[in-house]
Amino acid sequence: MAKTAEQMQRDLLRPVLDSRRLTPALVGLALLVLAGFSAWMYQAYTGIGVAGINRPVFWGFYITNFVFWIGISHAGTLISAILRLSNATWRRPITRCAEVITVFALLIGAMFPLIHLGRPWLAFWLAPYPNQRGLWPNYRSPLVWDFFAINTYLIGSLIFLILPIIPDCALLRDHLSGWRSKLYGMLCLGWRGTQKQWRQLETAMHIMAILIIPVAVSVHTIVSWDFAMTPVPMWHSTIFAPYFVVGAIFSGIAALIIAMVFLRSSLHLEEYLTPQCFDNLGKLLLVMSLLWFYFIFAERLTTWYGNQTSEVAALWLTVRGSYRHLFWVMVGCNFVFPFPLLAIKRLRTITGTFLASVTVVIGMWIERYLIIVPSLARKFLPYAWGSYRPTWVEITITGATFCTMALLYLLFSKLVPVVSVWELKEGLREEVR
Amino acid sequence: MVMNSENGIYVLCSAPDSTERAVNALLSAGMPRSKIVVISSEPLEQYGFAEFGKVRMPWLVACGAIVGGIGGFLLASLTQKSYAIATGGMPVVTLWTDGIITYELAMLGAILTTSVVFLLTAPLLHRNHLPYDPQVSKGKVLVGINSVPDALRNQITQRLKEIGEIRQ
Image (tube, rainbow over all chains, first blue to last red):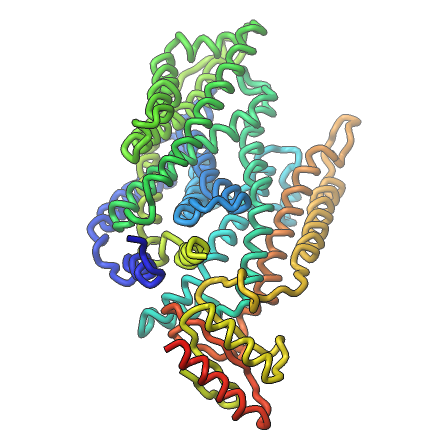
């Protein structure tokens, strides 16, 4: 039997109104995040030498994580914006889950340049401001483009997330009492729900959806240019920008599916995050898996065909050299394993899409690692060759970032309904009409 | 249920159909459309009482993008001129790379303008003395007018009471 709007509202507000159930998970995650933070502080106190990065592999786990998390951030806002613009009705339960991923993944990703700096207290040197040193950021540097692109995307994604939360905060204001009611009263900025306000909100969301798509594409394009603008073997390639964007959307959709599975079971949202949502996202993941395979094949084929010594050295290092195990695990995780799970309708269940997504996230992390490390380890002449082995500090910080994501997500789900109440009610009314 | 505020009157409707009747009742009592307030916990844009005025937001956003873009280009190019580095005869102001900064700041300008225009035109963040009832959060739709002329007060109250009865 179809739910009424009132039942729907009660179900979706329940995780916020009854917020005690997730406390043990929150405490556990907070401890793991603390472990990662301690490792970072140890590095800041002792020096960047405690990390495994060295000459010539100056970029290791931290930059891998940076690229990976910026990629994950593409899930949300981009998918949400595309589905909003195409007015896909099945988007309603998933848009907020997706938008939250973007904001948190960007925050986590943006941390890594600071961690990688070694002396994070000098991070403000990245910002363009007049100073006595006479040093301004070099606008020809892709790292400065990163600064502008990521901040624009972060601000845009934050606004894209917050705007549709305002009416739900007004709902919470009326359903809670005491200080919580006052808090949500402030957060909803005096929202009443006049038809003028609804119209302005819908217009603003529509404009934001149009704006955020090119911004999202530009962000990962610019992240790819961090590599592609450098004459390093296997990096200096025109294919890198679309290859990175595709990889980002691919890993982002996988992360979204994983988050939805956990939300579905932990917050009992089975009737809202339906198998239909997973089926549709599974199809999208399948398309991205095929696109990813196309890009990696095109990239490697072009390098092999060009047969330039330094390029081929880096290519064989990954395909049949010391990184071959990681390479073939990556191909398995990103294509061989998820392909049947997503292509065969009978297997494209919630469990099937979840398993495929887990392998894709692992595979995409490995892909980022394989883009960065082998190319630096095999730069041109053999005297400049080297190797990289991560230390416990880097591994701990990397593990902690996944816990940070889970912690932030859980905290968010305790503060705001993870499924947009008003959008679902609107959808229900449209169905009735 | 009809409520009287200091100067206004409003009625809580249980469905958009009765909301439509309440709006029509107010219109037929001589109240201008611009004075009638309809408050709901979800958008009701498919109904006749929804707002259908001109929306200026896209134009303002375009202006925001232009301002942001010009600001971005000036930031990059003026910095490059002020702190010129030796480029070996190559241009000091590099249009290709400055284009990236220009683009990003144009988008940022558009994004910030969207949110500011939304806050100002919705309008949020200021006390607008609109009628409100927490029942709206439970699915009711509130229809009313902020200030009722004394001559029409009895007539409007009577008509809205009729809507209330229909709802029941």
